[in-house]
Length: 172
Image (tube, rainbow, N blue to C red; front, side):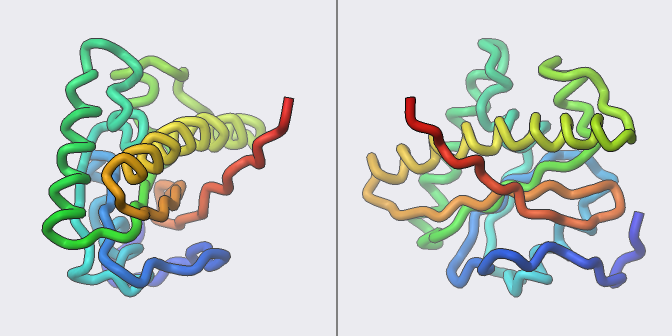
């Protein structure tokens, strides 16, 4: 883990949010300082609401399981309150490598290893759920007349953050 105050080489291939942000991250205590540091890196100090759910995007989707379906409603209720109270313009979703919620709570994946292929598979797993949640956020925004930009990120266990790039949709 990085020491507090230690700068990371974060992905800078995207334009950071200019307005208030709703941040969704996982509950993993190993990365709390790194999440705050990343938000500071994007010049968002004191300009974001923070929702914490095990599994981040997957948790906000209710783990795609009936047992956790109420988590989805909780996330969208909070998004609505944040839009009303703070005029949120962007949603940041920070996933992280080695997330126990994916393997132990929601059981959508086994624990990923460190080989290049396992890391690629892990990143792809996170991308799928970030894109699924991003699509639902966009629909929610349209239904509530709120234009929201959604960005997904993947943090490694040292705090380095990369943008999760969306796959282009192919036409059938």
